Length: 622
Ligand code: F6R
Image 1 (tube, rainbow, N blue to C red):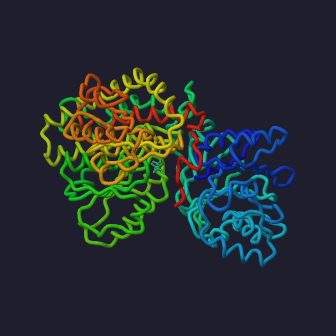
Image 2 (cartoon, rainbow, N blue to C red):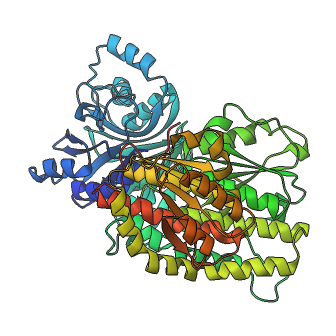
Image 3 (cartoon, protein in one colour):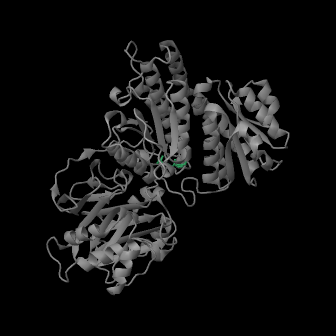
């Protein structure tokens, strides 16, 4: 949530900063702002709403400054209005700050600063920071005074934050700070960048330095110095980004979400290539995780939020049914304040596409912390499942499964979800192989089905996009939807409903099909369409019966089901076809028409599919 970016070098800063904000806008788009230094003064321009408002304002000014910081906001403290937009400055506008995170003790600090005569212009938590820094700066600062003032300020702040700071008297320095919120530094030729995410840096350089929590850095045109919070100098090795700038473009698609839906076959192919062993290998799966992580594991707990939590539910089904390991799935935001009793031989899996979700990271941290001094069976074993191997998650867990989805820009998760599912299939199969809960033949048969998935998804996209777009026209006035599924497809009902509500703003509920009659069936009438995921398998007949119960209440019935299925043809008013597939693999196909339906309903209404209101791609606040 919130994106910060900074630039120092030889080019016009505002151009670079605007480009960076564009790449970071997925992190929040309530307001945007830029601060540069020109003729020894801070120049600041801010605008509420999306980035184009700021662009418009900047179009009327010429600013050759080669140093600056910028911010795109997801409002936490204070309404999404211009006076709350970052950068924030102190009373004399000597210091400008952009922040991603939350300063928990800002009210106490604000009171103290007001008694010292500071004037506040916003309701944000961030504004205390420039005032504090300025209060520690001498009237005529020199040498390390700016760096030291920032360091003293950090000791006063409680919370999780990443900062980029400039000071009018230091026209060739940006100070950046990382404390439980992401921050990356880009190393160019005589120019340096900082940003919340590599997306803003990738168009300029592949060489990056990742700051860790508790580190700060000074960026000058001559280089980057990294320090800990006691100002001890640290040596860090740069690494090379795998991203290419081209991944960050729409490549002819109208929206990133549509592009990312279309990328799913390629992502699954990449997973298969990476994690299936060559023929005649000792094990059919080659996940790059140390077997000590899971050997002797007696239970698994999966911690995640949102769509990743839905992937966790499918993961639970697979780990229990294929590998026979009892598995619990926890909402990270709940788990952190009410963890389960400690159990021995437990593997904890954090699932997060961004690798930065504050609740997921905090829950994992807590889980590690509470096991630190316990006897060895109780010690933490942690695994991350993510498409962002460079994220904070990776630093926090013992090992990760990189789901190979690459970066996802559309706020609504699509390819990252199917890739997380693939991660769980591989993990469950590897465990099933090692624990011999499935025979090699059974595993090979599931793998054969997995190999067919990319082509089957291509078929759905090619044949179903037009009919789904057509169908979407019929729901422009619909206020409520119900999605039902059972067994391994119950999480897909939840995911279908989440996709629809987050981008089209239509109320949608996902429900286990068999639970409808215990209450929610009261909602049904001819105005409430019911989408049933009816994939052949052990619960197929049950789902069809539950759909019939909805039909008897006059609901319009839409079925996600394979072709040439007489029972389904007779039951449903509309059909979203998917190819024939084993029930075990059906979630990966069943979710595709639901992603497309949500997409077309929202796109036909002209809604901002990639940046739906009130949301952000990376939820870095609690
Ligand atoms: C929905 C969506 C969110 C995220 C959730 C967790 O489309 O994207 O529900 O799944 O915010 O995010 P990550 O996976 O980054 O931890």
